[in-house]
Length: 111
Ligand SMILES: [Zn+2]
Image (tube, rainbow, N blue to C red; front, side, top):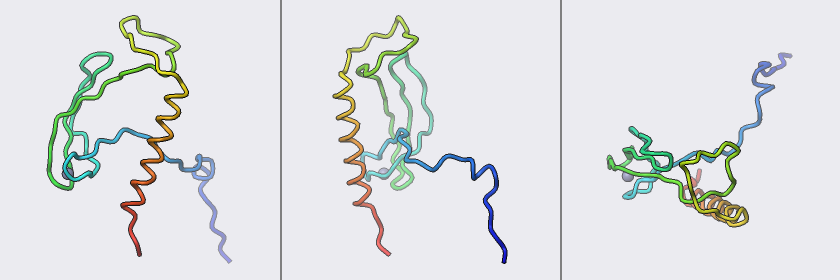
């Protein structure tokens, strides 16, 4: 009998986990877009172009920080953001994850 064994590297790898990367959804069809290009405007702002692989829409976007939830251990003196209480950030993150889970159910495929 042949026994299958995982390669040593795979056995040591951490278990897969849900990622929380940035995602831009197409404003027209709701599909995740591809970031074509982006550039940092200043410490707080970033802009770029994204392309929808479903409906061909291309748009310019901007992202920026609006609050500080946990202070930096090496703060930049040029950055000043209003403080957001940690419990509010935790509530916002939990609500966002719950909404994301509901959204994934909408797109679940049968069969
Ligand atoms: Zn689209």
